[in-house]
Image (cartoon, rainbow, N blue to C red):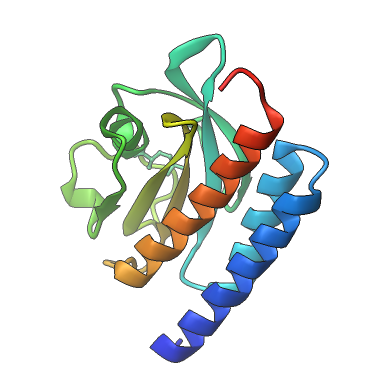
Length: 165
Ligand code: SME
């Protein structure tokens, strides 16, 4: 996909995510719509999903809506994995070669690179978006900017709909 086409697809996806955040009946349905649309439009995003912090245990991530191969990692302590590292640091993590990263928890042997973007609501990390690609070094600045905007849209939805955050 050319950079121009990628930029167009991302713009379309952000518009769709914003619109969905205005009328989604639940956080889960918003997340389902977003992962389905991303999987359909961005071919190098081979696994797209959300992990959210367990409301009863802030040290644990719980798998939410996703599109891609089933993963054995349905609960990830924030001390483990690239997923845990992103939440613990509060920063986006990009891994060009997952097999060279000792933190990596394998979901599929086809995965070569990964990006994990924290979702913030009311200034606190509440979860994250996790993307795997079968291509090495699949995620650049455009992907980071795009996914951080998706995370802001989801965080905004949480701020508007949940009193506890
Ligand atoms: N690779 C992640 C685990 C989640 S699966 O990729 C879906 C990690 O290292 O935390």
